[in-house]
Image 1 (cartoon, rainbow, N blue to C red):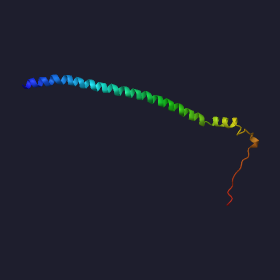
Image 2: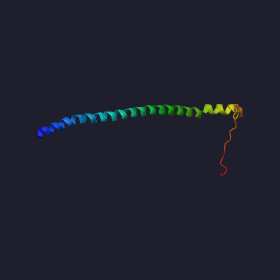
Image 3: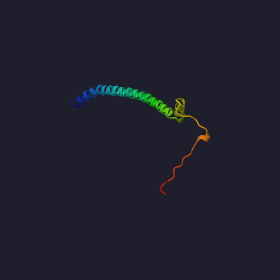
Image 4: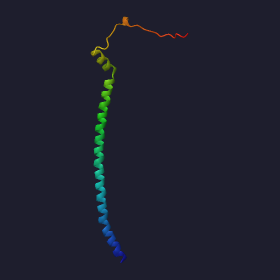
Length: 93
């Protein structure tokens, strides 16, 4: 009787374990494809951030600021003889 019971349990456990294995494989594949999608999305976001960082650096460059001010007529280049240096002296002495 004991051998018969163990034989039934063993014969029923094999298909059950195979079914559990299939379920685990399915969960793994779902998670795998989700992670792959997140990795590709992350790569796109990183590339976009690099472009934005480069654009900000380009906008902050002194040459661009000088060109912008020069094109709008807000600054003019002057010769060396037109520069005046002012020093502030302490008056409380």
